[in-house]
Amino acid sequence: MGSRETQNAMTRTRPLPIYMDCAATTPVDPRVVAAMLPWLRDQFGNPASSTHPWGWEARKAVDTARRQVAALVGADAQEIVWTSGVTESDNLALKGAAQFHRNRGRHVITVATEHKAVLDTLHALEQESFQVTYLGVGSDGLLNLDEFQAALRSDTVLASVMLVNNEVGVIQDVAAIGALCRERGVIFHVDAAQATGKMPIDVHALPVDLMSLASHKTYGPKGIGALYVCRRPRVRLQAQMHGGGHEGGLRSGTLPTHQIVGMGEAFRIAKEELDQDDTRARALHRRFLDGLRDVPGFHLNGDAIRRVPQNLNIRFDGVSGEALMLALQDVVSVSSGSACTSANPEPSHVLRALGLTDEQAGASLRMTFGRFTTEAEIDTVVRALRENVERLRRLPAGDSERTHPGC
Image (cartoon, rainbow, N blue to C red; front, side):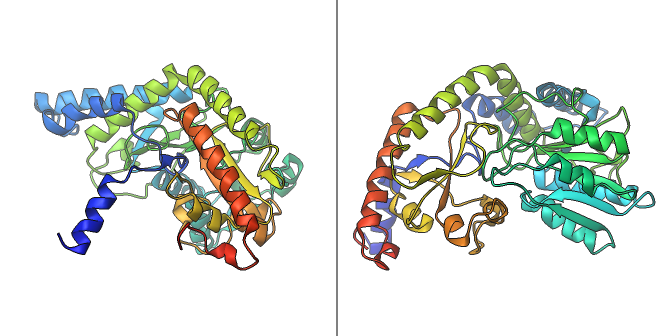
């Protein structure tokens, strides 16, 4: 056997590390896979085909999934528009609303800690002569409501604030922010990719006009997402995808029935098991923090209370996050920030917005667990963190970059 074949064989037999990167993507729930399989294998009709049973059955499955997604967030099924994922949902919401209402105003408000799917979309709108105000946050990662209110102008047409931050897990007060927008007639968009299945959401109780929803952050398949578009008061959007006029003309393209069924089943499970998932997550959260509290220089980034328990963005004074991540790579899979910006060598824009120095931001790791994480896995990760933090701190200055044992 050649050296490359030997290496591949070793790679295949090596046990995978514990998965603690659920903010990047969650594993697909086996029940979701089971629900999807018939629509990949046997029932392949196009849901837009209205002249035969194959299409009718696919349409029924899509309609069922639409109701399931709507139910998790308290929406009506008619308010759910299928997309390819949250990035497309954010683009449709922000570009669609801004462009449709450009004659009302060209000012948009957002937060500096938003996901790049929002920030980059707004940068594109700036090229279309829109003005964007990027509000800062406090050291807790939370937006100051007085600053938001002061930023509202007579020509403000749109605001976008993430419900749960993808890097530090803090929860913004979208109810209060939305109320300020509703008073001024400002369209309010919320990216809820990291919130579904982690906290109760009711869009009819919240003054939210547009909400982006993810499948693969909620134990569903990748490549499918949705946008909630409020019908009362009605929100008008300019379509960004043109073709066959699918989804009420807002998003043309043949619907992927199997992925839609998967997202529907994932959201059905999330609604049914929300309380028990939350109870487990809070217990694991406490177990993780209790195991590290006595480590000198240990910090949790972001507000300690107003957050989802599944997200733990942490740092250890004097320890490089990259060095620690590499030292842990055989034990646990984690990230240093958003998966969508992991190739960027610059420190996290979110952590810098919290006031962390480049050194502190570079020392931070995002650990996010989920439905299938066990207590034993949390204990193993805590033990590995303690051991490797101590080991890296013992290394002479400059040697901490030699991170992996045997390097």
